[in-house]
Length: 154
Image (tube, rainbow, N blue to C red; front, side, top):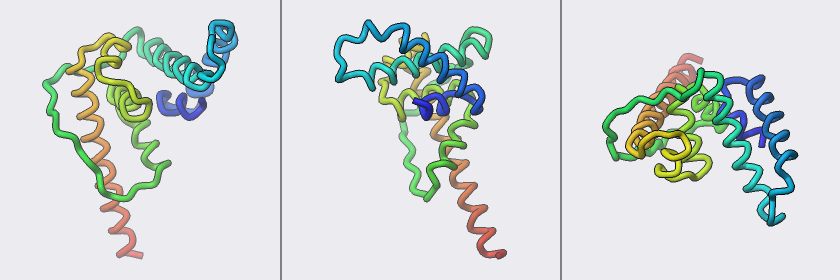
């Protein structure tokens, strides 16, 4: 559950706050869990929702989303990148980009579900995802170019 909190929060301190709040919600609502076999999915949803509430509170009500037409092209990055480095790059994304990216790519929500959850249109969700992927693709390429330059200097 901590990894979920880290993906949505900007820093470890915020992730710890979200984690604590999430567990409080889990314990308060444990009696509402009907099927014990779904406890992990149930908890995951609580931690995602707690993370989203935390971001909204921190930003003073709403996440900042940019309404733009969506380019439906999907970007595929074929450049090697360490998992932890990628998580850091995701964490550096603006809140709107990062939140939609996490919900869609990491947590498997559809654009329709993201739109309902964040009170944005499906087109905005798609646009935020496309922009997040574009930013990540540029960062990964830059990092790997810098890595190659450093290897030749070494």
